[in-house]
Length: 492
Ligand SMILES: [Zn+2]
Image (cartoon, rainbow, N blue to C red; front, top):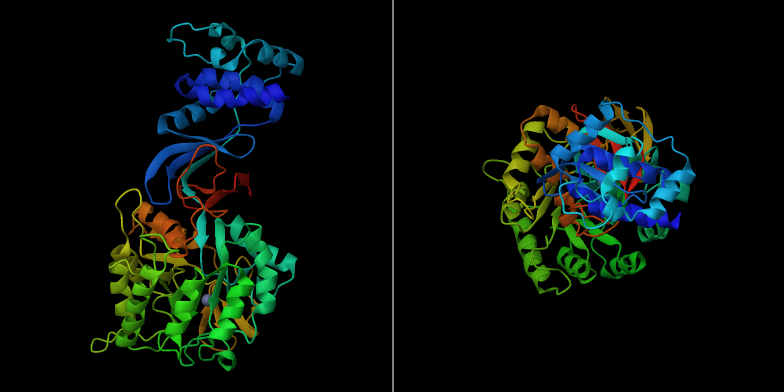
């Protein structure tokens, strides 16, 4: 078995130039030992929306072997449709072949000068078709940095480990391979911090988002006004200490008393202010976001080009644009254009009109191939209701009900959060067809990753690197999720 493993590694390295049929045949003898190679086919986009191939090949450990070209992917499809089948050769015979023939020699291209044993044995190898998933499109796993729960459980309300696990896995199985757990305004969030931090440390969560409590009473949305309060730097420091580096963002109203002190403290700990739930004027918003641009630049822990701050669900829970008083929305959008802020948009089709979502995403998308990051991106703001049937749920102690796919505070018309996973947003806008698929990928991957500074964390894939267990989604031609692979493991 040890030998077989080594050999497979060689196959992987050596096979690029070998004709596909030969590759399939050789794999064959080997793959039955460890049940290994897997092909995922479809147009492959990286997290920046660049089209990089026609499929992904994974080894038995879930690590990426290589990105297939479109032609190689087509060959895999054809090798299946031509009726190739798995080997029925006895294990002992295969072991003998493996041990006698060094694989790099067995795999030498036929046209290459002979450097060792010629590949005569290959045509005699049994035919084999490695398992594969045929899709239309492959994107990196999506990243949701504003999400309160799913599967019937909400992070602010349900913090038994199995409840947290269910909420996370609901989103993971839907294609969200990395997420922040969002809290709401609470009298004391320490129990939630203690319950959620182990999930961050184990790589199941990418961190925590605090939505409040230093927000506007007038724009509290679905939050409990009784616990909204002015900034208290001592309590904020105690939460940051308890988070041990896992607090990534905190929603603060720019006009909140002490907002600037809160921003300073967040940056000191490597977290970012997320402006929102605000009744600020445009001038108030502009003053705070300008301040943070400078404060962030002074903080050595942030790399150059890092996004200094975010906006919590642009358009929702803030004053609307008026033509004589454009207010904070206009300031946030223009700061995004200057790359000084990144704007969350709830793109479920209910919180913001889809036409407006497309306008903002398009206006703040930066597409300079590798590395261009958008300054508007999708979030779900989902509650316990995500992945669940219509009914009644709880958020931060308040009752919410799902009607026609939207969450409302019970008995009101106040929208209180989402009931989706991020792939639902992707599908909605991909089917509308007004934004390029590459733009939508950026809105679901590189946008949120850079906004939250989540590069390198488990569940995050920006580029497909050989030897690394990737995170990705396979969609069919209708943009329905077919497979989700997280850290090399197929969750489907
Ligand atoms: Zn929220």
